[in-house]
Length: 80
Length: 402
Image (cartoon, rainbow over all chains, first blue to last red; front, side, top):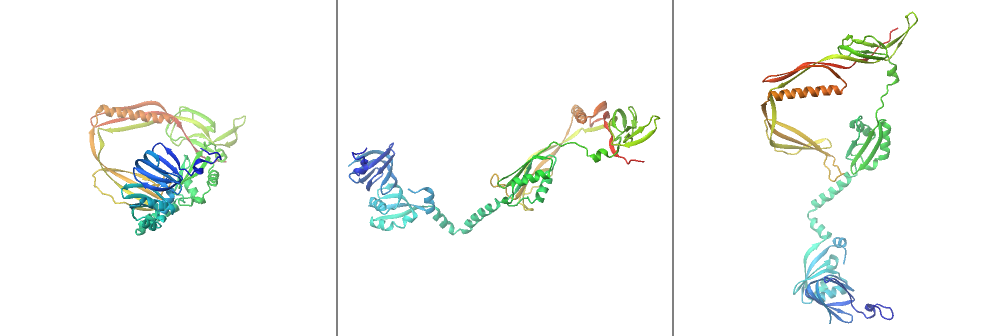
């Protein structure tokens, strides 16, 4: 997805970029910080909006300044 | 996320983060570029995560700021391993020493194997190798396989092909021997000799190729009697000897001789019945010094033993400079059993048949067989005379007379 200038949307709009593999792996880029972390719910703050992930046995195998990996049984991914 | 090797080298910790602001703690770690991974929520107040050992020293202010308490659950990696074995330095020292000894020993040859030789003995080849400086315990880098193969090929003309290869600590020499060429040396061919009888008998056939025959077909000769004289006489027209030429007598002489055959089979036969009780003795020889391992000695009335020799090796090709001899001592009881007449007779016949087959394979013909088998209760006796026809005569050196 690119805008008229040919710049990708995640860079142009500072949007979060999500890659979901099945329902067990979720890779998130461009997030700012963790608002809430629970085994059933993870809430992340992006640069423009807020993302809520719900599921069972949620865990964070790794996270860094730019990206994060969430594993577990993912049920919903909601923008707040 | 760091790779497995990096984590083990630097050391990592599994920590428990307990407090109300766990998310703040995670965000602060991110801001301070402290890497956490495998983050799991354990209960309402508690998180567990992995952290590198160098980063662990920097999380105290963060924990204080986020009002969290940190507890170490597990330590993983080399720094902790060395710390654990710092108090047990002899174990670590022995481990490192064994690796050092292994490295030193693996740089030398500890076994020489020779394959493919039939006529030239292994001992002979090993003696030659020893003289050339190739022996057990020599350094591997001192050996040039190609040069050694060439040397062996030059030293032994009978070897048509030689291969020398080094596998681990084992030197393997494979050879192929050429077919021996039967040739008489000139000196032997020219040396005058006679043919004499090597046993008593009647001549049945005689073909003379070189020399003067002294006997003829049908003659009875005794052991040591001259059969063919190693000289050729030149006669003139008056049948007078003008010159004598000495030669190496060559002839095929066949003798008919008698062989007395006798075999006794006793009526009672001894059998060994093994009880199954056994013990073993182990002896390890290192550098010519034997060491006997302790064993539980048992006293058997009748016993037999056999030994096996093995060369212990750590890996497939890493032979240790030691020989392990295992001796097994097995208990048995001797039982006497009476044989039936029929069995004894069958055995005597089989033995006679085996004997005849064996001498026939050597080119001997059976002219007459007068062997009788008599059986009674106590024994079976096979006795009689075999009349054999076989090649006879051997060359003996003669001194030429004027």
